[in-house]
Image (tube, rainbow, N blue to C red; front, side):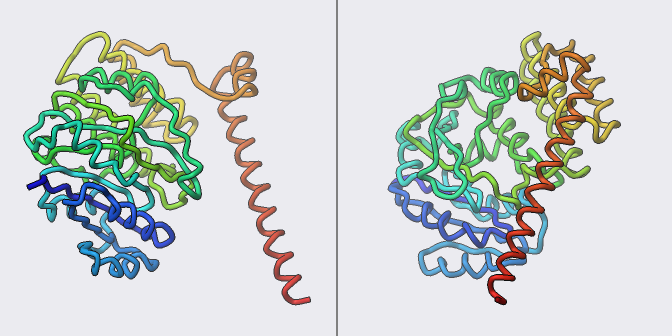
Length: 337
């Protein structure tokens, strides 16, 4: 009999997108699947949407709000599959995504490899998605994969992976006190628990951007603390696997990038990151930005350029918000006239 694949969907306030996500899971050409949705205390109609799919065999679990990692752990606890497919509640899978990856693993539940697949961003419909190859889109060892991702700031979103349950058990569960970049920390452990990552260009998934509920968009103090902790845990795990000049440079680079991202916020975390960079031997990473940022940075330094950049963003956001309010006011005037 074909191996069972568990499709695990954590859900929090995803009512506008959940039905489409579930349809993409149900339409998989690999038919031996179980679909588990864990609603993490949604305050919108997400739970009601999920329950409509119970007649299609979808298992729906409701819990009080504990965070995305806790929801994934609950789904993983319930899962019976030989392989694990994570799927966020607003993302999509191509119909043959799982089948393509299963073929690459020869459907071997005892495989020591994990599989990634091509992915693309979209905002409204998957027809917008452009699948542009990245350096991670090849077969690589775990260490090579992490060095490539961290040095070049590349990523693979959770739905792009297919993981044998054996490797998931070896890596351990999601860390529930993490929020921002919790998936980066988890899949770092998954990679290091495997013999390597295979890549399928035909196994496609779709990553929705522009969702205001997304954890990746959170920039609170708690979010930055989570981001720093994920870097600490992930770099420690990589260095346990291989402590060499190339891995130390990659680790220093992720902390240097963190410094550029958070400035001028959370100065205490910046200092900790600076100490990490020095301890690891330094990084030659320079701050990134548009032409104006580079011009200001060249003459006045990157810190002042960062402050100017933030002011410009804040002005643009305020202008957009004002435009939205004016538009709403005009609509009300039209309705009442």
